[in-house]
Length: 333
Ligand code: NAD
Image (tube, rainbow, N blue to C red):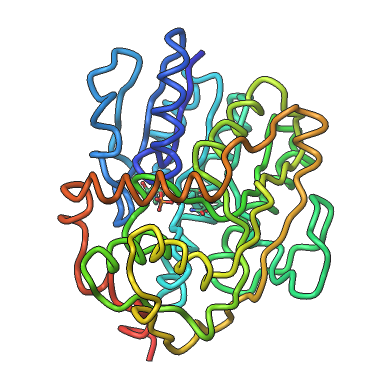
């Protein structure tokens, strides 16, 4: 099988590639990535010499290149996105360009060459689940920040291309991922790295926001299971049902690193901050047979240990902006 991965140099896409190539030697993966801030080719160091893998530095909005690659692929998986909510608050434009126009560019090619397309979306498009039950795939889409709004727009485009042109597409909506190789500006790596460096760990508001966490290797397994078994035109939620407040996440990290909770610093809340994300993934569990395997408490220990043992991976990536308590305040106010 020929697989085209868009955005495979980032956190989740690189985990998919490493995991897939470890378990399959009969498939060829091409990874197209423009290498923005959250990407890192070091994530793929262990497989860069693998004969079944090649990398192309390019933009998903380059329609000529996308056409050439889609034509020669069986499956296209789109991980490419501007992905950091704080950055979308500071400057939404790149999010509109990549998340909406980039998805459009791939969709046009899928329509032309009739290939299988898996679009990686997010639970953030459902918006705040505060005091409501969990969202399923038929729940209303209600995004509250520019990142989520651009991802929601892309979701709608994918669905519209299925309904209008009958393309062979699947959309996944996963909860918050964590694990090795996540860029230092996201909550968990930022908390780990700042704790290791004995810097205060910032928490937005009172830290009571609830996120549903999933280990990244569970997410990539779910996507892999959909290549063979997913139904065209369908949306699949993906969660490990580990709903935890941001405060508890940081406290667990401090416990593992044997640091005091006094290191937590409560900072002004993020604008438009959703209180709770919560989804139900019984559809993929019952219809496809996928279920999350990793327990949060085990996986967070593995993750903290990975950052402890791989300081040479993250040291070159950290600067004032990535470790700043509120990156959006640098240009938002
Ligand atoms: P990431 O920022 O680590 O990776 C995104 C990758 O896309 C980067 O390598 C970047 O260089 C690439 N990219 C950006 N713009 C591009 C363009 N125009 N052309 C080609 N490549 C481009 O993000 P991630 O956390 O790995 O997320 C991957 C996908 O999963 C995103 O679509 C995100 O919305 C979705 N998602 C993420 C999470 C999460 O918790 N991280 C949860 C659910 C869904």
